[in-house]
Length: 136
Image (tube, rainbow, N blue to C red):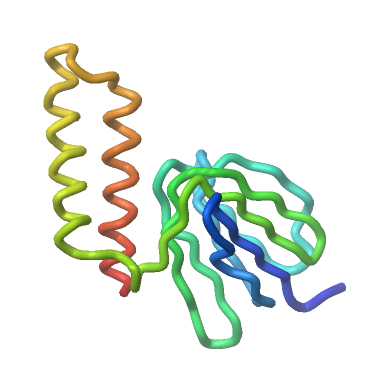
């Protein structure tokens, strides 16, 4: 049995990660999935906004994922993200403005001006970016 995993993460614009890692945690719809070598095959949708972590030795890295899918196969984890962002690429001011806009959309939801599912997804995406900034 392999002792490592090949992790590939892509979004529509670029390849974000292509590394050999020891473990991965991905934000699935129903909670985080921890993946170690030997994990059973699995296909899952990703949460609209979540933090993926992966580790090689003592080094842990973080990636903000904004929806998509994960495919787990023996020795391999593939993430097809709607959007992925390295925390170092996040801007504090822009992320704060995005959160404020998402919270405003939630407030407008009560007046029937906004679809609740869209407002919730905007908040989840903004919160994931805020969480990514905290791990920078």
